[in-house]
Image (tube, rainbow over all chains, first blue to last red; front, top):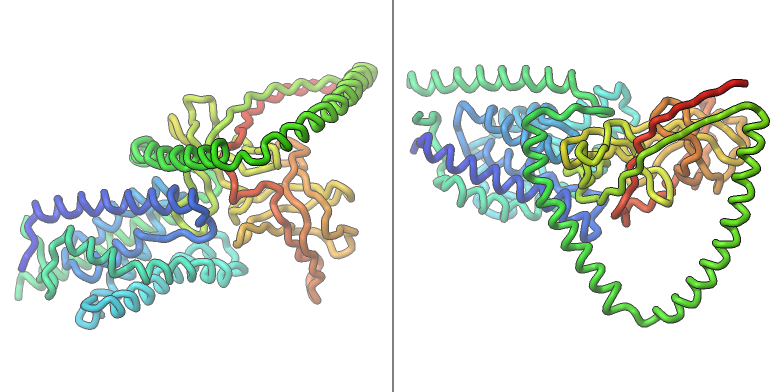
Length: 178
Length: 279
């Protein structure tokens, strides 16, 4: 099964709306109710889903667009997450046969594994940027609580993304009809 | 088969182009100051009202609780506050005397310093959505006179400085962030150091020599060096000092004087100094 361009535009627009809602929840709603110390990086889950379940050559550009929106909510900017996203996407491509996200437990473990890869990449780049690996462990450790919560939430997020993209169980075959 | 090959090629090319763009973006990225792009401005202006809505709703609910439900001890508080006001009024009278004396002495020394500052009261509407950055968003921007690099304070002390600003919103790099470095003085000993954000809502005081006589409980104030923060703003208090076996400096932990967990309103200072010193 191949994805039509109109389908791609509609689904991606809905994904952007969903990500904006997630960003507002993590930047305003959770701090308002006292969840200060750890942020939930929903953008990682959204990009992870797209990396595992979609097979479009323009996927890197979609990741870039999602990260551009994320940059309005974080001084992290678009570039750091885009690079981590591409790395995750390449790895997910190699492991595609193993990662079917069929059960909630597999979805949680997959989400946790790829978040670790993502956050390790981000921590390494940040340390390179500030020319000091003194805080590498602390930065990485600070991601752990949030990533566990996100892994637990991942089956719900993936279900929402499945509804948006209407991905068949076997995934899309390569190519997008434009 | 040919289609699959072409798709694979397209994938590789797209991956490479975007990865190169991202690496260039990372190399150009500054975590201490930013001029938002047009895209960021538009998204921030469109999305931030949603953040403000959530913040306002939370404030209204909290206010409802505080004003109507938990007013059992109000009359006791009223008596206590009246006593406190009369004590503060007498203190104020004393301060006015000191101010007048200060002015007389300055005139005597033929020294004049005029500081005009514009203060903008702003509400916190959100936090940075990435875990590794401690940034808050305010509901005031350029339209309210806020400028980049302006210091942000509360009655408790220093919050940070303005990192980026759009027409109606601005982001503050707080002192909890590892990219924010504040030049400080230990109030008691006048020892210089740099406060940097570390994780878990704590800061570290760096570059303090091992022979300095600082103690747990010492208060830190801004040193006024570097041109961002005015001198004398409370920054925090030393909570732990460790003498490492190696190295020339102390490992000092600092608790910020501002309670960031309960941060709702802040003051943004736009200083316009006009210093005339004639000594």
